[in-house]
Length: 137
Ligand code: HEM
Ligand code: HEM
Image 1 (cartoon, rainbow, N blue to C red):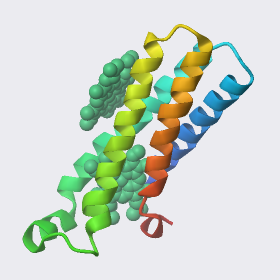
Image 2 (image 1 turned 180 degrees about the horizontal axis):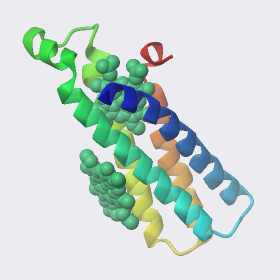
Image 3 (image 1 turned 30 degrees about the horizontal axis):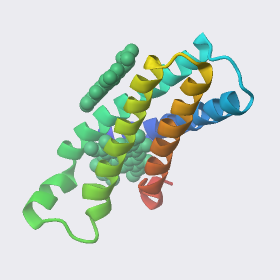
């Protein structure tokens, strides 16, 4: 059940995050003013990724393969799910959270968009790099 939620929630994470990065780049390039709509989008993206973190951590320790990993250790077949995916996703979410915190301290619209483009953008790249694509589709 948790696995299914994590799997479907990932579509929402990707969609919202891609939109947020796109929105930040457009705002930056077109020198737009940072409005309440941009603020809400950044916050919504933060919440959606934090929820995915919670579900992911929950599933990690509940999953049947976690038990078998404890018994048999980590090898090439389970390293992606056991180590690489969780670590990269946590780093991505740390970056996104840092971006959120930093943007709040900035005053100029340009700086806010730049912070979102950089931190949310890097987070997105981290996520894309370690999604278990072959399990997912
Ligand atoms: C393992 C679970 C979680 C961890 C470790 C975590 C960690 C954090 C951290 C470190 C911040 C600091 C942001 C700052 O410096 O301003 C934060 C902010 C936030 N988190 Fe989480 N979070 C988790 C789960 C959740 C969940 C489940 C939700 C929503 C349902 C959530 C919603 C938020 C929101 C809304 C903020 C931003 C507050 C603001 O700046 O206005 N988080 N979280
Ligand atoms: C933005 C963050 C994340 C995204 C977008 C994401 C996305 C995904 C996707 C698409 C899958 C494949 C699902 C499937 O097999 O149908 C997956 C699997 C998994 N994820 Fe995440 N994930 C995130 C964060 C995390 C975190 C923080 C953890 C744990 C600490 C975690 C633990 C797992 C585990 C254990 C699986 C394997 C499920 C299984 O096959 O039993 N994920 N994730």
